[in-house]
Length: 100
Image 1 (tube, one colour):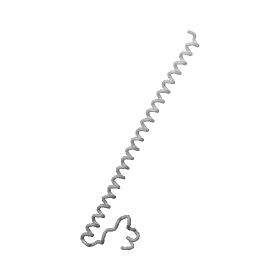
Image 2 (image 1 turned 30 degrees about the vertical axis):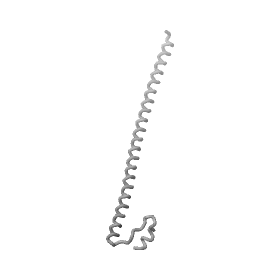
Image 3 (image 1 turned 30 degrees about the horizontal axis):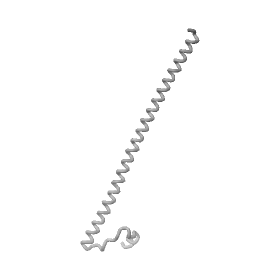
Image 4 (image 1 turned 45 degrees about the horizontal axis):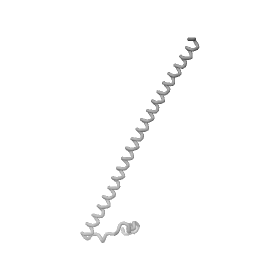
């Protein structure tokens, strides 16, 4: 073998080694990006579930408050301290405030 053939083989080996290192670095970066994305998606999913639970609790609280108010009105009506109940949809807030 000639010296130039040896140099070509050596250069080719170095290039292949560099390509392998670059490929390994890229695969490592891709894997890190995937892990970050999975973590972010997991965090978003967790946050969404918490917001959904809070929303459910708030709606439940609202229903319970309405039920408690209606029950209190019924008790007051039975005791004679309140007139007949009005329908919630037909009640005007301004008129309600004017009565007070």
